[in-house]
Length: 114
Length: 111
Image 1 (tube, rainbow over the protein chains, first blue to last red):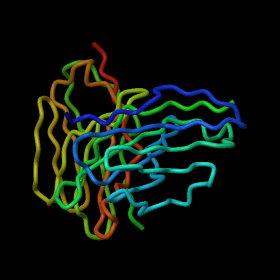
Image 2 (spheres, rainbow over the protein chains, first blue to last red; image 1 turned 180 degrees about the vertical axis):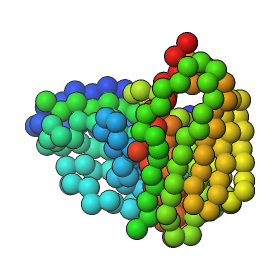
Image 3 (tube, chains in turn purple, yellow; image 1 turned 90 degrees about the horizontal axis):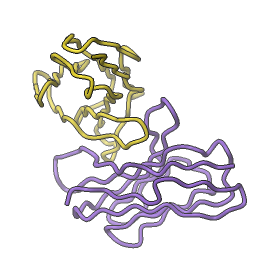
């Protein structure tokens, strides 16, 4: 199993809604990432979890709240978003304690904020 | 400041017309350089990792090379299914493993 699975694939929400994005991997990777990608732009790092602990928060607004309940699961809770938050949200993972550095990405969750 | 620059921004090729994509970088203590392929609306798909100057990796019609300042992704006899955006990323020493991405090269291969 070499997959990172993200749900939902598409999400439309209003600015007052609360929703969550989910990411799951069963490769035993102990680092998990959230990236945001706008159209025709490269992925931008949002959060990094190492061994289920938040290790990096790239100055992301508090309306985005990450959570790592266990080593296989990563959530991104969304509340009071703005239309400019519409983007493709990518989850990625990689093993820790090895020389390998490549990230394994999910297919993303396309978020539209109305 | 660590930086990754890819060129060209877009490249249109005829099927079978070989070419190269460039990724130049400035980074303190390169730990690895990565090439990804991204199809529209999908997550990046890992292609290659290069760790040291002189290293080369191949996969089907793609070959990646690395020097001390840049990397090339050579595409030999491309097919329409090679059309995608190709992203280059570097991992710097002390970056906790985080990748710095270039803006990508959008490749279109016409039959």
